[in-house]
Length: 82
Image 1 (tube, rainbow, N blue to C red):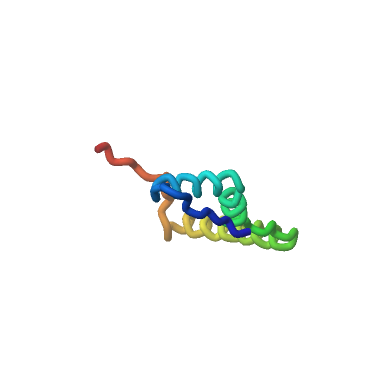
Image 2: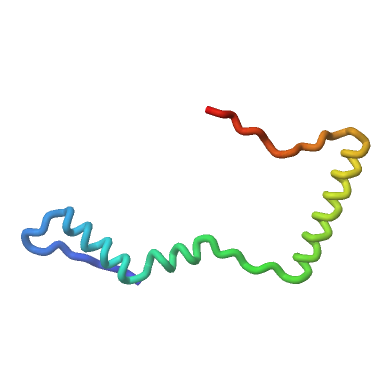
């Protein structure tokens, strides 16, 4: 969908840009673009199950390494007072 704004007689460039932005807002082009920009296709049931199993495996692996003392448990981070 093309949006075209032509300069009228005795119209300065600032008012032309203002008219153009108003038309863009009214047409809804920006809203559609923002909706589709970050659209993620929903995961299939199989992919959900796979990712859940992988999370569980990683959690068990992390707990095992923590128990063996090979990694230290981290309790978040401290903020510096500025």
